[in-house]
Length: 128
Image (cartoon, rainbow, N blue to C red; front, side, top):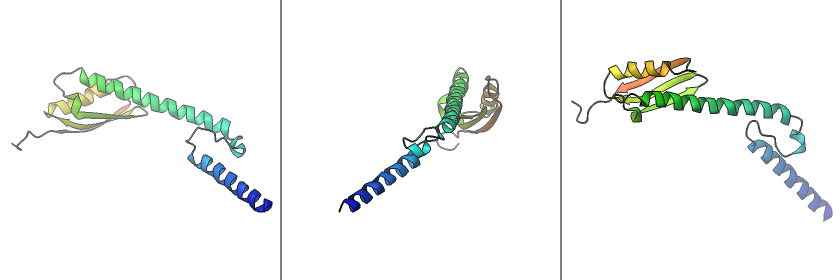
């Protein structure tokens, strides 16, 4: 009977250890002894990834704010995606000239290396 309980406990412990390792996010060390060696290397890369995400969010906010300063462009219909300095503009504008203007504004923001412009002109209600 003791052997069965011990074996069950060992299986449960192994199951928990595998679950923790599987569900840990990149850069976080699992709380199991088997991953203690790799904790220092994965923690360093995770910190760099977190900094990259923060930088992307900050760049996205800067581009969005720069476009928002121009009242003739409705920035509420434009979404900005930033990844390592590359910016993608999605959404709609009311006039064709605003497409190029939004791209030029985004390109002028410090930290932007390239701009992919996927903006389209919004057709007025009723299709005319």
